[in-house]
Amino acid sequence: MAWWIEPALTVVSYVGFFAYATWSVFSGTYVFADPYVSPFFSTWIGFGTFKLPVIGLLVPFLAVIPLGLRVTCYYYRKEYYRAFFRDPTACARGEGVRGRYTGETRFPLVLWNLHRYALLLTIVVTVFLGVDVVRAFIYHGHFFVGLGSVVMLVNVILLSGYTFSCHSLRHLAGGGLDCYSCVKAGKARHRLADALNRLNPRHGWFAWVSMFSVGLTDIYVRLVMAGFHEPRWIA
Amino acid sequence: MSDTTLLVFRGDSIKTGTEQPFQVPVQEGMVVLDAIHWIQAHAATDLACRWNCKAAKCGSCSAEINGRPRLMCKTRLDEFAGEPIHVWPMRAFPLIKDLVTDVAWNYLVNAEITPFTPKTDEPVPYRMAADDVERVFEFRRCIECFLCQDVCHVLRDHDQKAAYYGPRYMVRIAGLEMHPKDTVNRTALLHREAGIGMCNITKCCQDVCPEHIRITDNAIIPLKERVAGRYYDPIAWVGRKLFGSKAD
Image (cartoon, rainbow over all chains, first blue to last red; front, side):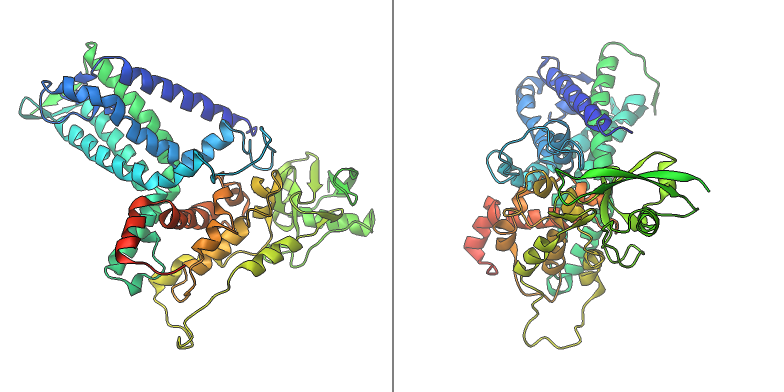
């Protein structure tokens, strides 16, 4: 594969996702088709739609949290430094833009050191998404399975995979310790860090598929809103 | 037995040197270093090349093969399926002659790192739990081939050797920092002299490592997280003010 194909695909995918997500969040439509809700709008609290106007106003601001996680994510950094900033364009291929290089030591890139806070906030958002998935299996008080329930479940599994394979989480969970046997709960923290360490090599894979799954889940809920007759089973 | 074409860099300066073509007879299982040895024996006895073990363990025969930093002894000719093979020296370091570069800067950097420092009264031999030392094993696989240093764009393209130690020494520092018996905190060194903030995580070092050490994921990023906790995390800062912390 030619060296430029990966950065080109990265640019197209990221620009496409960002444009679609921005349009979806600011389109003025609350993407909800009972019992499904788009992951872009998963910040509503409580059953029913009566709270939507208030919570809906917060949606664009809350959407910044997972965006912040992805922008400061170590995997995404690799991808966009290569594809957008050409710094480097590809390994041993030279630089696209010359000039004084300061890495991540100056504003604004130095802020990427706060990645852990974007992670912690995103974990809260992921819990909300999980609650939304539970609701997607309940329709008028009955257990229910629709194609949309499965789509939302797969989406939250992929998003959780991305969130929990994070390098910062591994560090916070125990990777930052020098000696597990020298601290309280060291054994448990070692097990946790070790489990996250096994997940970590798939961080890049989860980053890609979860980005697409979020967009596709939003599209699916919009299709149901538009009258798409999906396969459903109600107990 | 078929032939393959090697285009080998010749000269003592990257600017004035040129590629010289050689037709080399290929036998099954041959690697690029075998071809270089054939050239030295039959076509260019003055071709300069550094090598030692021919088993991918000494890290001496680092070069750039078709633009990618690799060990010549670990790169088979049949990978290239009859295509010309370009063999160049590592470009991040000053050229001495042909394929030999001066890698002395790396050893100067190495000397700046505080070595392993256990407690003075630590009983010998050291007794350590497996859970505590298993992470460090990966870093000890490094053969110091300096391919990661060569491909690192901070050193190679920006020539920021005064500002960044490079991936090889992030691996060394990670091995020391995560060692359960080491007592020195090198976070300040990482933040200042070692220049870990210069790394922008493009993972080329990890891509080229012949020992498959996950340099960026398991050494550089954990060290960046330690530096972030020490210098950039506001809650950790408050915690240190309230409860104190280990000195750097």
